[in-house]
Each structure stands twice: as C-alpha cells, then as structure tokens.
Length: 222
Image (cartoon, rainbow, N blue to C red):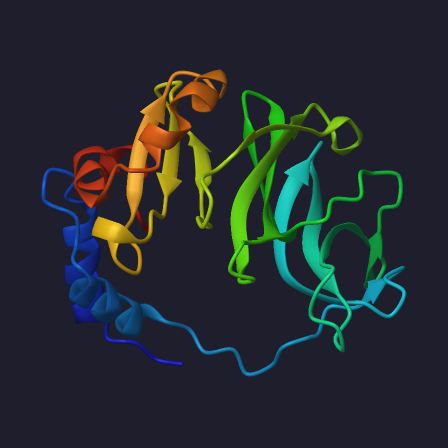
C-alpha cells in the first residue's frame, strides 16, 4: 500500500548521513511507518520429517549457495524438550536433514565467521530455587555435520549475536540483565578472533549501549 515519498526521502537522507548520531527509536518508527509494505497474502511453511512436532522460531542461513532453515521443534502439549531441526527446500516443502547433530536447544540461529558455520541456541537448566534458567550455547564447524561446542554465554542471557566486520574483527552483541542492567540492556564489543571469546566472555557481556553508539558505523542500519 502507499507511503509518504517526502517523509521517506527525508528519513533516508538522515540514515545515509554516517557522520550524524544514530537515529533514535522515534525516528526509526516514523521511517518504518513511512516505508512499510502491506502483504495481502501469505503462505504457510510446510515441514516434512518432524514426527508431529511443531516447528517455529525459524532462522534462514546459507551453506554452499543453498538456503537452509534451522527451527525450534517442540511437542505442543509438552512445552519442554525442545531441540533444533535443520531443513532444506524440496519442491513445496521444507524437509528435515537427518544426518546432522541433534542439539537440545531452543531458538537456534546461524552466522558465518571466516568461512566457518557458527550456530547458537538457548539451553535451559534447573536452578536451586526450582526456576528454569537459560544460557546461550555456541557451536562451530566447517559444515553442519562437524559442529562442536566451543563456548557458552553467561547464565540468564539470551540474544548474543556475532557478525564478521569488514575490518576483520568480530562484533559481539549481548543482552545483559539484572542488577545495574535492569530488565535488559544492549552490549557490544569487538574481538580479533572467536578464540578470544572464551577468556573474555564475562567481560564482553557487560558492555552496554554506549559502545554501540561508538561502533555502529561497522553495521549501518537500513
């Protein structure tokens, strides 16, 4: 449906000004409202080989020029025992890939760093007070079959993400919560290699929004 060309053009000009401060939330929402597109029809994804499990929170990624999906698989009546499923497109369906590790994780996501697949997912565990805790676990490998765990984020933290920067460094976005961080803040740090993450994990996860304002030019928003 329609949008406001004048408003959109003004906002795009602000976005392209890399020397200005990052846009605040109000400007970003206005820009979205001016340029958003309405889709009048949609199509459900059809998954095969899931044995009665629901598949949701899917995330696409590319391996050898083929687009794959990783999704959270869970029995609807249980709400526990989640694991990750990998899928490839065959005709009109997404078919589960069977010869890959069975990872007992939630909400998987994939990126590529230095031509290596980096997969993350949320692991849940029981705490002493009987509440459910969670943390982000990371795997790496040259292909899906060779994935092996290489690091784990702090307890009670989701939404840790990596990005390979043009400089060769690796950007790490985090979401520290609790104590001075309240219900959650956004953290950011840059590392030379993924190997630096193991020793620096507890420090990197405590960096906050001020670091993003300093480094945002590495990943301009569109």
